[in-house]
Image (cartoon, rainbow, N blue to C red; front, side, top):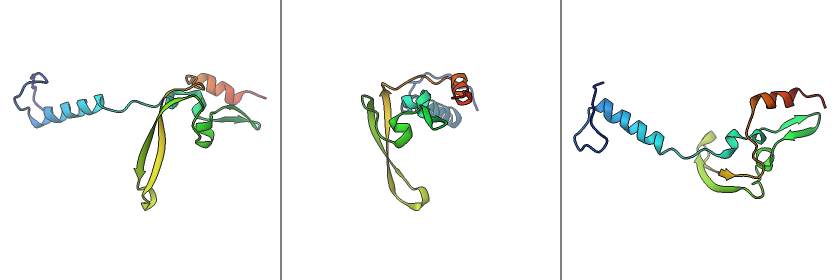
Length: 113
């Protein structure tokens, strides 16, 4: 790979290696935002002796959470050679959101009730 020091808006062409790197960098910047659920302790229901200590309607039964701000997303999958439509959500705000804490989760799982 060369050492191209051309600015982003320079009309000259880059070598293939630098062009590919810049394309990958742009794609990373354009990635869709992550859903809030990925960092929420309620995203994984924890059941201890028949009592749920964590969980939400979405993580337990794929029902939208009342009061959340979310954008519905539709995806097509070819899983097992079927053309199924998958509905999911990009959650931006949720009344049941609680930031995940791995130590707290471990403590809850080990707690005797």
